[in-house]
Image (tube, rainbow, N blue to C red):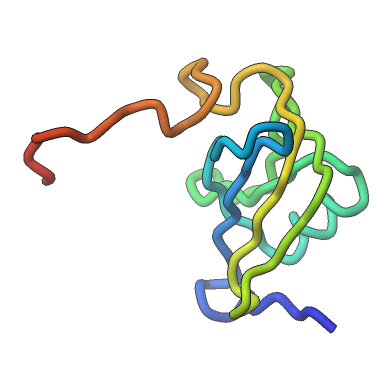
Length: 109
């Protein structure tokens, strides 16, 4: 039986989101028990907003929903991987993925 370890990080675990069709990493979010249960219930990716301190269903305001097709858990049971069908952009900037910038020869601050 899988038991997600929500106790390591203030009740939150990282959640990597991947396009089920092409494997592209779309974003990283955080989940707590409640958001994971809502994701399982609705089939739509639901996260915990660390800045707003509330649940948020991806796409509620933008229409860019994430339809969950598979949920995987890492070997330490403290990270979740969602494989999704993404409606529109995953990033709040309008990009398909949050990982659209390349770090090349720049000073890391």
